[in-house]
Structure formats: structure tokens, C-alpha cells
Image 1 (tube, rainbow, N blue to C red):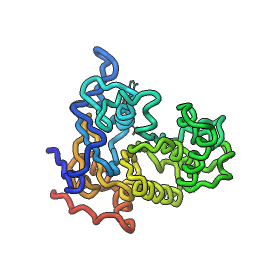
Image 2 (image 1 turned 45 degrees about the vertical axis):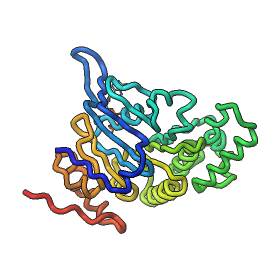
Image 3 (image 1 turned 90 degrees about the horizontal axis):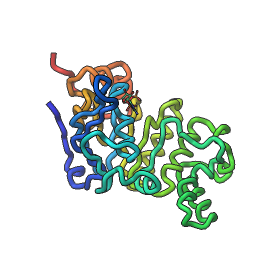
Image 4 (image 1 turned 180 degrees about the vertical axis):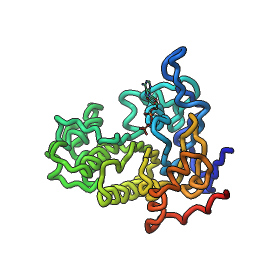
Length: 277
Ligand SMILES: Nc1ncnc2c1ncn2[C@@H]1O[C@H](COP(=O)(O)OP(=O)(O)OP(=O)(O)O)[C@@H](O)[C@H]1O
């Protein structure tokens, strides 16, 4: 049974991402390997949607489809009313910002040059305007002007994430994709990064899709959770609603020891009702 609760506020907001009847098949013939099949997903303006699923269930491949970097075998992916494949190339960073798991900063570029990269590549603005815009984004993510000349190798893990976030936001995209935003951070840095993401989501009116294995991050940020399993989205809803759904992955993910710890955190939703035997 598929359950898709839709709060009234979400029902009013327009879709930012629509995935319809998506199939992704790698390889051919005997070697064909189906990652997605009949996958449906709608993400509405203002949501912070967490995409969770076991290893290899196709979360990163789905993000790549939404970014327009790859073409699905069947079905459609629409972003802001246009096919995602039209985002490919120069237009992408103006509509979708992407924070890669390990930051993916250019190691030979300074912090400022990393943040300014996409705007500079456009070639439409004077250099000083590009620099000023990058400095604004650095301040927005809690970094100081003196950080601008540093090289990525001189940064802490938390600072790398902030620089990568500033870079993802340089073109003011309405949609932000986050791949494991808090992976590799210690608990304090992780909490601080979640606070920053929450503030920016509210201040900039962002729509966010985030892949995460971290339950603290999921409970901290998500307005909705979609679970990928069996090649499709098997359930979506609030963290609490999803945690009640009967599926081996969900039981392991939400109801194990890590899940109990995450739900016990201050501010986390009340625990889900015990499952019937
Ligand atoms: N270009 C490709 N060619 C062939 N197979 C691929 C390709 N890209 C991804 N895959 C396969 O598709 C499956 C889904 O990969 P994906 O990286 O999306 O998983 P994931 O859900 O993000 O996993 P994890 O949580 O471990 O990062 C994997 O089995 C992967 O090996």
C-alpha cells in the first residue's frame, strides 16, 4: 500500500519538481540492471524533502536526473515546469544549486574563486560585481571576508561545506539539492550546518531536496520524507508517518537504535505509535 499524506499548505504550493513514471536501466540484455521503475515524486515549493533509502537504491542517480545531468530510460523529470534535461550546461546553476557530498571544491582555486566560478563563467558581469556577489554569499553562509583568499586544503570540514553551499547559491537558484549535507561532520558542526540550512531555507524561500543517511539531520530539517526502495518511492510523509510504514528498510532505519536516539532529541517529533504485531 502506498501512502502519500498531503498537508493543506503543501497542496497549495506549486510543484517545483515532478517525476513521472521514471525508469532507469543501466546496461543491456543479460547485463541490464533496473534502478528505478514506475517512480513518482512531486516536490512542492518551500518543502525540505529528505530522500532516504538503502545503499544502491538510486538516490544519487535520481538527483542527477533532477539536475539534468543524465537522461532517464523512460518517464519524465520536470523542474520548474521545464524538462530537467534543458537545465544541462550553463543554465543549470541558475535554477538548481547542488551541494555535493564532499564539497567538490576545485582544490587549485581559492575560496572566493570557487564561490564565484559559475557567475564568472557566465561572462556577463564585471569582475568586481562577481567578487562582491561571492563575498555576499560567503557572509550568508557565516564565513568572513578573510576566508576568501584561503585554499580548500586549509579549511575544516564544516568550512568546506559552507563554501560549497555558498557556491551552490551563487546564482540564487530557487531549488537546492543536497547530497549528504552533514556527512563527515562532528555532531556540533552538523548541528550548526543544519541551523544554517534551516535559516537559509526560510530567508531565501528555497525548495530543498536532500539525500541523507543521518537521522538527526532528517528530523532536524525535513518537512517531508520520501523512501526509495524496490525501485520506487514506497512511502512519503512526515518523518513520523514514514516511520510507521511497514518495510524492512524502514524498520532498520527508523526503529533501530539510531532512530530511537534521533527521535529522543529535543525538538524531534513524538515517537511513532508502536507497530502492531
Ligand atoms: N553510470 C552508471 N552506470 C551503471 N550503473 C550505475 C551508474 N550510476 C549508478 N549506477 C548504479 O545504480 C545504482 C544506484 O546508484 P546510486 O549511486 O544512485 O545509489 P545510492 O542510492 O545513491 O547509494 P548510496 O546510498 O550507497 O550512495 C548502483 O547499483 C550503482 O552502481
